[in-house]
Image (cartoon, rainbow, N blue to C red):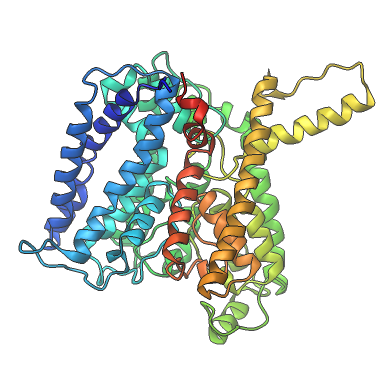
Length: 534
């Protein structure tokens, strides 16, 4: 069988990305130096990634890629970067025999599948964790910042960043960005695709810096005692990518109400199509409020927020008792009832925060919603399937797909009643191509097939290993990893972790996070025999 894919060109470009991964590693390295911590995890990783990258580049010194090579390059890049990203965790846990001792020998990330899980969760901005102790005392400031930084790098897209700064990727940049970008397609904002990539990353960087400054401003103003400079940077790096990692074990619950209210609009921004901000900044501010996807996106969050707020306010959205083995106890439950029931501001704040967090797939938690009742939890589960906007950093199915599906169903109902009518589906005043509509249906069906298969496999594995899980827990686990959401319910709730799952289950969830971040098709295409045949 003749191979029709120039895999050497794809791997050469993967090498270019890996070689330059050493640059962002300099930030946690500098932080480790500043705090007097071991720099070995970062120096070793920098050496490894440069050597592997340099070696792969030699496969095709002057690569020329098409759409096929683009799919392969993007799929392999995310696997390779996540694998390299696990090295700092492993070096921290094991050290280098005869060179440097282990600095966190009891870390749960000492086990390679756990380290890969944490790294893939970071780069795909999922936010699911297997870290046993989320603490700056148990892990160094440098390692914890690397954990945050992986999400920031993966948010707008590793390949999009590479297209923006590496000349060798600019020629095939359109194919690469289409394969990686979240949503049905990426809008070309400028004549050159590299300039479009830079424009997206500039907007992304600008919002990140703004959030960091505002968070630290709250601290300086006495409204956020725990939000020091390190925490401000750490949370700025994980809000805009809709990541959800926090150096605090209790996530955003560890901070004041002012911090929670401030983070909400930045999560909304992160789930919005960044192209709309570019249009607003270049003289077309009406494009944002006039965008149909944005209106549906905001409207869906508003409706869900209203429903959850009402449930919390009247007490129907809160559990009646604390079962044994959960992440909350009866004291926490009583305090929650006293805080939320009959009180508008806290009920509205926590409902808004959690709905926005899960719709945008950020995964932060302002409260342990494991202690919420079934009606509120099922609304949050529904929110996980909505997703952010196309062209955002959010995961999930995406609002634009749901919008087009609903419009196409409405069109079918109309044409059934009026067989002679011709009624195209329109989005933002433009006719949506029928091929694009079929693609959206195909993606959505594949998404739910993977969800159902994943739920079944994880349920079987849990039964095999004696891990007791409810149907809601398993469903939320699959939805949270495939949709790059992060927290689910029960064992994998906002204050829980994925550590109890078996190694095969964790590796399967690594695959779900990888496939979900690349929106399924680029990965499945590479796995089909037809892709490789002459």
